[in-house]
Image 1 (cartoon, rainbow, N blue to C red):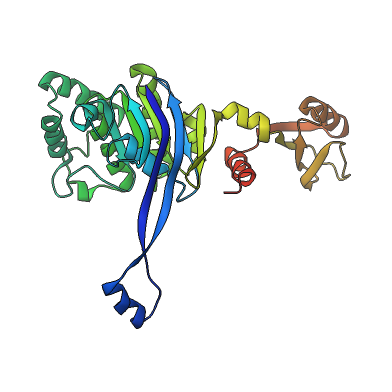
Image 2 (cartoon, rainbow, N blue to C red):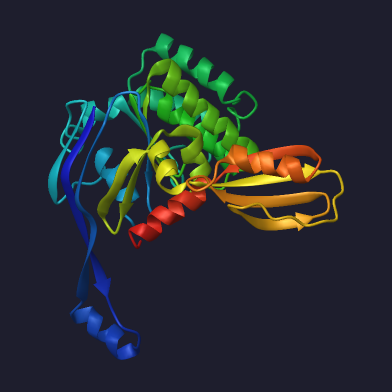
Length: 325
């Protein structure tokens, strides 16, 4: 469905030193620096996938999304999405995609949300019955009933983002590009947005490409991640593979009846200890979790045990370190 081959993009950035002399000089002659945003990026995404497109700030994530959505034209390479070249076939192509930029809005600031929806209906030439059916579904699942008649400027960030996602889905696209869709949202709004993305993916088969710095979004939604750094593709694989590769450490938290004698269990590192509570770290490649639990039960009278895998953020940080980005 989505295939990029050798996509490259660079930008010319003005360069000027501080000072009045340099400012005057720049009026007549301006130096530029060439910044390579993307360097021969290639990957393919199958229909119905949810892919996390990750990387540090300035890695080229948004540039890639803008090329795939037809906003930017690359310097080189090819991009085929549903048989279209995005920047050449924009009129027909945009009917098949939805795009949400967390820091950009497609809603009109001073008019009610429903008026923006009506305008988008006309822009995309959505049949009235299809529009009504889709709108009713979006209002219900994204809980827009109480805010759809309010001007956009009166909405909170979380409310506006829910409306932005609804606006991008009014024409029933096959592909949804999400660039930082949960930026600045509270916990309740994030969960609502994540659940909705899961629903449209499972029920309608919408392909989702998600860029975000919130690794909880990636863990909750994606089963595959593509890592980009300094404009180059560094990793493309399943999250499970990352966990096997980097996530070998687990944390065991144990509560037990009061025990004043400290203890040591081979193969573990004590993070915290008290007479009624301890937190241990283990490397599952070296020590079995079950063996640690058995040793604990022999030393103390256990009340409760919790086992936690390494957070996805820590795994991604290790991946960044490996590629020195």
